[in-house]
Image (tube, rainbow over all chains, first blue to last red):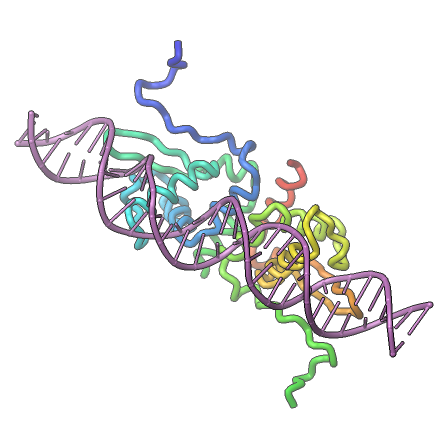
Amino acid sequence: MSNMGYPDHMELHEPELREVPVTAVLAALADEVRLQIVRALAEGGGEYACGTFEFGVSKATRSHHLKVLREAGLTRTRVAGTSRYVRLRREELDRLYPGLLDAVLGAATAS
Amino acid sequence: MSNMGYPDHMELHEPELREVPVTAVLAALADEVRLQIVRALAEGGGEYACGTFEFGVSKATRSHHLKVLREAGLTRTRVAGTSRYVRLRREELDRLYPGLLDAVLGAATAS
DNA sequence: TCCAATGTTCGAAGATTGTCGAACCAGCGG
DNA sequence: CCGCTGGTTCGACAATCTTCGAACATTGGA
C-alpha cells in the first residue's frame, strides 16, 4: 500500500505552489538561463523534452536549472522512457501571482 | 563646471529602469529582508528614513540592502541633512512591469 | 568646538550559487 | 547482451551574496 494510485514510474516531487516562499519563486526567475527556459516554455505553450533547451550550458548545468525551476514550483516534469518532458505551471502561477509571469515575460521578450 | 545643474548636494546615482536587466530586478526582490523593506515602503506609500527599517539586521546590512534596491532601480533616495529618505519607484515599476509589484506584494502580504 | 546621531564604507567570514567534467543510471535498439 | 542516448548526481572550483563589527564621514545641536 505504498503505491497510492501512482503509475508504476514514480512521479517527481513537485511542491505545492503555496508552500514555496515568494523569494524562492523570484530567485528561480532571477537567472538568465532559467529565464530563457521559462520564456521558451511559455512561448511554446506545451511540453518539451529537456534536451530541447540548448542555451550554451552543459547537460549538467541545464539539469541543475531545471531542478531549480521544478522545486520552485514553476514547472512540472513528466517522465517517459529515457526522456523527461517539462511544462510551465502557468495556470497555477497566474492564479497565485496574477500578472507576475506576464510582466516578467513581457519584459524579457521586449528586451 | 563639474556641477551640471544639480543642487549643491550630489544626488545619488539611480539607474534608468529600462537599463536594469529584469534578472537584476527579480534578484533584488528575491531576498527576505529586501522584500520586507519593499513591502513597508509600498504600504506606507510615502518616503521613509533609512533608520525606519529595523528588520533584525545591523546598520551595515540594512545600508547594503538599500543600496541593492536602489541600484536595481526599485527605490529612489533623497538626501536631507544626516538622514536619507527612501521611496519606492512604484509608477515607473508599474509602467515597465505591470502587475509584477502587485503580485509580489499581494503574495508577501497574504503570506 | 566638541559631541551625538545617521548612514556609508571597508575588510572578513561563511553560505549559496553557477558551472563543468566525469561517473553513473535507465531505457531502447540492435 | 552490449552499447548508445537522454538525464541525473557527484565532487570541485570560482564567483557572488549576506552578514557583521569597526572605522569613517557628515550634519546638527549643546
